[in-house]
Image (tube, rainbow, N blue to C red; front, side, top):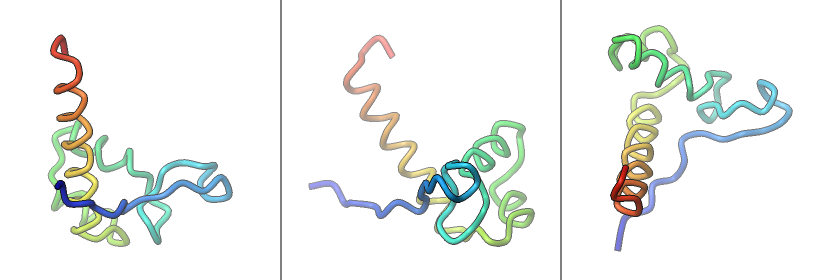
Length: 78
């Protein structure tokens, strides 16, 4: 059975207009993906957003990988 990973992020309509943010921060999760997409490193992201823990960022990336893996398994056309 697959290990369950607790979500390191949440959404609350009263926080950041309902954006998905890392738990305990005001940092949108999209900021991590934007950073990586613009060729920034995880270390740089964590330096620039010190309220996000390394474990939160890594857990988010693991969850994204799992979601993409499930999607590609379900849709062979990709």
